[in-house]
Length: 193
Image (cartoon, one colour):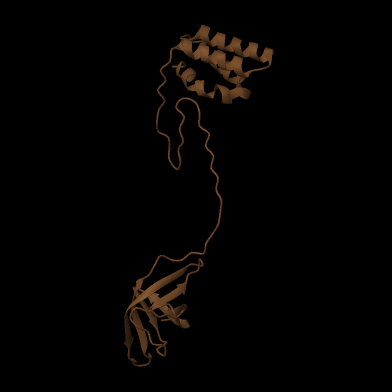
């Protein structure tokens, strides 16, 4: 067995007994051929992990094994995992801003939104709301007149085959202002059925 790990051995009070104890951790035991340093019940054995954290073990049973054939004496130390690994402190700042508005607004974090929106509004209310949004947000008079005309066309063609075409025309006409019309789009889309 190759002793590739380095352990620091400390007594119960935390005083360092040795900084360089070569060994191997496996199956709840630390095995080392360094029998010159006495290992006692309650001692702490620390090892540095590849990620920079320090893992601490508490000695439960420091069993020394005599020389067997060509293999010299060794410690087969039963250990318990000590405290959670000490990870070097990292400082970071994270700012998360969620702006949520409109009917049926929600935030999904690491999840899929499988909900459905139930909109209870008469078609007259939908078109009236579209008109009030346009009048409040569209400052260019020509653009406002064109959008109001598209809303009027949708209102006139609702429940007919021509509604889908009027809807597409409206969506194309308000593409630059979609953020202000977005809350009403689900109710308007429901009229396509």
